[in-house]
Amino acid sequence: MMRIQSAGHSHRGQVRSINEDRWFADSSLGLFIVADGMGGGPHGEVAAEAVVRSLPLLLKQVLEAAATCEPEELKKQLCDALVQLSDQIYCESSEAIELEGMGSTVVAVLVAGSSCLVAHLGDSRAYRWRNDELELLTVDHSLVQLLMEAGELLPDEVDKHAARGQLTRFVGMPAPASPEVRWIDLMVNDRLMLCSDGISGMLSGRELEVILGKDSSPEIAVQDLVEAANSAGGRDNLTAVVIQCEESRTSRQTVK
Image (tube, rainbow, N blue to C red; front, side, top):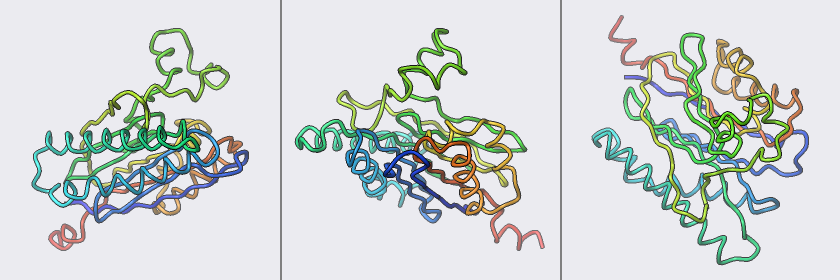
């Protein structure tokens, strides 16, 4: 058995006047979320807040039965909850003129034993740091990602491209949402990091590796991530959640 420690931190950055990012972390539930609101003004705040407030409620029964639930059923339940949440936010934005166009990205981790589900819509990301190597666990749902996959855009051209920031999937989209959900294994000393594109867009993979590879607590790691992104320009809202897998106290006692 593993013990999970976590922390989250968010900042509006150096350019934006408000923070439309939100995060949720509950190690006892094994649920962790980062949401990056879109739509401008209050719209993004409302959508991102709805994600971190409503998703844990939609998953309440699933979380209670996670230890005994079959892997494919758990995966389906998480996918269904994200689709339901997206439909709810789309209905709200369609019925209220002041909320028209609101939406949010979401990246979520649900820990179940020595594995976890990683789910996302949009360009907020999940990474796994293991044995001094950083692995990107998600693929951005964005127009520039599609252009790169088609060979029409190079990675170093993304920041200057007119389509930067245009998402192909998100919570609150008009068509039925299609979240990507996958299982990954977990090991003692693994670190997972969820972040909005304010972090991943300002820091290179090597910079993320250095920060996540330090022998520091999740609380210090998320502060270091946000501070580094701010120092690099902080062009967007900055949010990170770090999840650390540790040996359980019971295991340590057994070894002794």
